[in-house]
Amino acid sequence: MAKVNYSVIMDQHNTARAMGYELHISPKKSEELCRVLRGMSLRGARKYIEDIIIMKRAVPFKKYTEGAGHKPGIGPGKYPINAAREIRKIMINAEGNASYNGLDPEHMKIAHIVTKKGRVIQGMMPRAMGRATPKNTDTVTIEMILQES
Image (cartoon, rainbow, N blue to C red; front, side, top):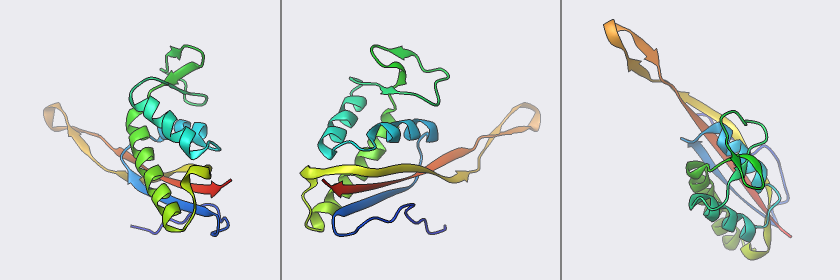
């Protein structure tokens, strides 16, 4: 297991950061959700993620639109519930890190959020007549940096 570093270096006096390592969520859905959350205030992002989890708001898909049905007002979109739950955990962790460092989490925004490809967990699915098909699981590493505005 290699050490994963943050992809950007920001001022540590007014930022807080958190990382989720090798999460078992979809890389495509997490990338689309991170694109939407980038630049949002922490309060707005929390509300947005809660709306996704209860399927009140959909995430607009810009890059990976295949199979995404059209949602009212946004075009192609989906409800990435599992990715939203994992990002909510990372957001709570970053918020706790901010309050520990003496920053006010209510006046922070998401300055940097990005997904990285994690390791691939190898698996095999048995088939008929002694054959097997690969059944691999992709993992995702998500890093988040909050900045005081």
